Amino acid sequence: MQTSDGPLQITRATSLDEVYKTLRPSPLIRQEELDAFYRPEVNATRGGDKMKRLRLRLNRSADDGIPFKACIMGHPGVGKSTELSRMLSETDESFCAIRFSATTALDPNNFRPLDVLLVMIIEITERTGELAGKPSDESLKKVWQWFSVETKTQQQNINLEGSISGGAGVSKDSLWNKVLGLFASIKGEMKFASTRSAEVVEYRLRRIKDLLPIANDLIHECNLLLKNTLGKEWLFIGEDFDKAGISNERIEELFITYANLFSELKTHLIFNIPIGLYYSSGATRLPFPPECSLVIPDTQVYDAEGSAKESGYSALHAVLSARMDTDLFLEGQIQRVILASGGNLRDLFHLVSYAADTAILNEESVIGAEDVSEAIANLRSIYERRLGQSPYDVEEITYDDKATRLVDIYGNNREAYMTDRVLYSLLLARAVQEFSRDSDGERWFGIHPLVIDILVIQGRLIRSE
Image (cartoon, rainbow, N blue to C red; front, side, top):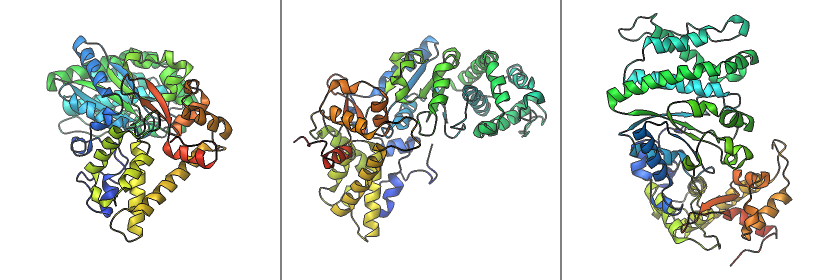
């Protein structure tokens, strides 16, 4: 889950040259990162700690012996993966997490529902072998046999012998090693799913109902091994299924058409899904009960009336203070970047990093007003481009439609909150933000401050005083 630049520096930056090391927009995964940088004040602006409710229901399910199925949602940059990391750190005594990403474990554009199930089978088998001992040959044989019925007539391109990697004291041609070799081949195939023949894909999908009981038997055995060895249960965390680049068709097929995959699997799991799917007409068919469907809202730095919100400002100030020496800002400039970010953590880190780099290029030792102004102008331009229309957009939504909806939301017109393709496109572009009211948890929508700037410049809005 880390960026390609390596792990975060977990001591706060004391010079502009170090800022990029602590403000990378990667989620906090390791415990030392959470200890160094996580600030609970942020949750106070979101209507409370949303993950507490999820953690409570997860523990109940484990106590009752019932598989826990949940999903979390939120717009880009709100910190979903970090919140999951924190929850996992607080349930570490009871659960062992298997985290996998749609963008790294799968081919984002071409994966099929079966691929997700196979990732889960492979991960739990390999991780159990590492921590608690290998599953029985009986369970492994069922998996092996499910693949062995594929023949050359299906043009399948998995070599059943795989790349055998013998372990210490294990026969090179043992079933365990053969299965590991098979898994290695499957992993490579799933990463380049576009190379598979359509015949193989459809053949496997028709047989997915035969694989489910095999998967459940294997999962049950792996859970028993882990329970007997470490006193824990396995918990799957499927992430990044809301990332740009994954087609709506793939997401709908996985979570709606093949919803039974999740319903029938006898394991604890939490998946990150696109919030737009939850708003869609197909939401009632999702395999996650409403009480276990959690939306993580944005952090409020303005209230519904457009006034600066002290608690939100203080929370983000605490986030920045943990990651960098605030004396690296001239007076008043840290307030400008916090308010311009709209409370979105990704935007906040982008603004500060851009301003810090500008200051370095100007041979300055601190971030000044001109550096911040340049960062704000750059991010405002990015938002302006997102509001336009591209030939690569799936749906044609005019800017007039978007601007009209933005003005209605700014004017607190509740009818403008009704989700449709226009509102969803604005939420996806982060032009519209979703918040949870402190007093009663009711949701409300606001316009990103930089988008308000754009509308004011265009004469479509007169800024509220």
